[in-house]
Image (cartoon, rainbow, N blue to C red; front, top):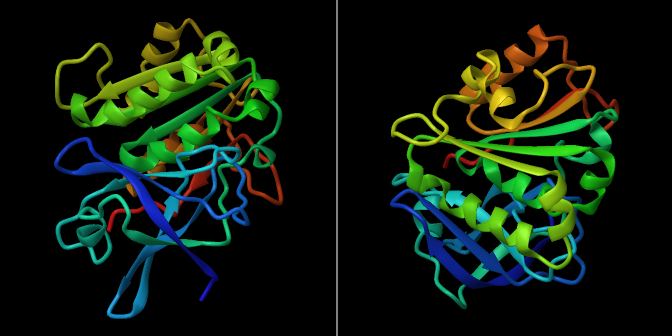
Length: 257
């Protein structure tokens, strides 16, 4: 079992019946790269019950932020949804993951494709000064079923755009594109559809997605990852890793339980 720190809940926000975010204290010894995940959880029956969660906070922030789905019968999330300010929570001391800068080759535009709570690591990435140094544009695309599920992402993007530290860079380089599939909205459709029909690039005033100019990070449901991977590979994108950088990277440690 990996070493664990006992942290405490600082805030909880329930965005919908199925989604919530929370912040915790952060051990001074906990280090991570923006976009990585760690194991978090609760003690159940005297034993740790853990799942992988991406940090939605940046690595220079003093607290940790997480974004979670609620699964009624989920061993962890069915309990985690009831946490309150002051409650203890377990956070692993080791962070890992593939959604990191050094796993990608240099490029002009960085696309962050996330669905549901797969948005979380990208909220960390859009706070990363290194990402703005490496890319001319950063495009955050968040796909959800319903408009109200966009609330957490909208809040964090607004905070980044208005922040003293990142605001100037973000206002120049960050493009936010929320899209829904089951309700009327200014952007509607699945991520793959919006790329394939050209609407995403057209709406943002960018060239069509290509491995010559663009790099992509993916985080979401297994179906979304499979569909996006197929689309990218058909366009000539090569998957990267921590040991061999490529044109796109995938995070497979997605929490649905």
